Amino acid sequence: MTPRLTLRAITKRYPAVIANDQVDLTVLPGEIHAVLGENGAGKSTLMKIIYGAVKPDAGQMCWNGTPTTIENPSAARQLGVAMVFQHFSLFDTLTVAENIALGLPAGTRLDELAQRITSTAAEYGLELEPQRHVHTLSVGECQRVEIVRALLAKPQLLILDEPTSVLTPQAVEKLFGTLRKLAAEGCSILYISHKLDEIRALCHTCTVMRSGKVTGVCDPRRETAASLSRMMIGAEPPAMQHVDRQPGETVLSVTNLSLAKSHPFATQLTGVSFEVRAGEILGVAGVSGNGQQELLAALSGEDPRAESATVTLHGEPVGRMNAAGRRARGLGFVPEERLGRGAVPELSLAHNILLSHQTSATVRFGMVRFKAIAEIAAAVIRRFNVKAAGPHASANSLSGGNLQKYIVGREILRAPTVLLVAQPTWGVDVGAAAQIRAELLALRDAGCALLIISEELDELFEISDRLIVIAKGRVSPSIQRADATIDQIGQWMSGLWSDVDSEASHAQA
Image (cartoon, rainbow, N blue to C red; front, side):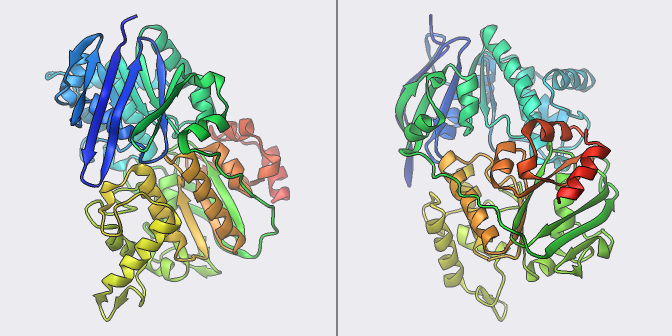
């Protein structure tokens, strides 16, 4: 069988690193081929080379047996290559339909395209509103746009980078069924994921990369999660030590919080009530776009429209207090958007420290203490093993996973009494994910109250003490992690919790 794609000795050098070092890769027609590696291993660079977004310094590419040079993404799309990037390539001021139209032939009618988007999204279980502006979407909803845009192109090769992080377990199964159907029809799929169980369940072949080089090729169906981890990072991730503890007093309380939509496509919050106590982790499950963004904005102070008494911090009403006031009272916050909100892309890692560390140690008499912020940045890099050229490296020079480690580490070093975290390990390799989760548990054990929003149910079950679900702007009763099941939480993510569940869960809480 003639391979769909063949790479030979692909090399890409940057000033501080060799991103791809003599990489070989072969993908057959109808094959679902995983590319596995820790953050910074060179996976994303390799995918961008295939898609024409990055030019290699050396090596050869063959497409359907013919030597090929892909000059740009437009040429890649003409060949039949579609890609869903980890960092999205969407214009905030355009609608979903307008963004998708940019990759289609000139003259495409937007009304017909909107119908195709709606039908394709429904077919794959990815809810989308074609007329909605991208700046009103959550990160998860942006990922849905990228996936639907790729599927509309009916590609010969589909590149997917972390495609399931926004889906319920049921939707993941539906997407897997779709991908298997595409593969059976001859479409080749390059699948990047840090979820080893997904790779073992879905993929036919797995190429493992480490430090820019290929370290092995295997059939993941014949491997265990532990053996794949050893191939990827040279060791198994440390076992998680989650010891149940008796929580302390209530630190963050939300009582009957209702907020009207801040824009036409926002989610209205209705009657949201819960509490987070010192020394516990409250996990919030839910499909992206069900009010997570709006809830975090109300809790962090980005949206100070709530009635003052509906949100209390250490017993003090803060519903109308701004973000700076809440930070001064011990609140920390890790947003889901890394670039643009969690970090300023063009600024150095040291300068990005100022986004959350504005104290007398970093700013005195209105003057920034540059040595101090560089030392804090260096401490985050060391403690969290961030792969970066140093404190003066720009935030956008880091891979997605390394930037996530940096942002989480920056907040943890503040020693907050309350920490809000959205998607703590999205796009982070298994070793780094284990480290972040261990640090969050250590913060809990030190008495911090943590609220963690994640679409990763396995993650929530691993680190949470209690769980709630958010669906359509409403919040379920809380349930002890030990009493919950993934199937039950998956059903609740569709808004299906009953009065019986409510009474039982309140009693357990």
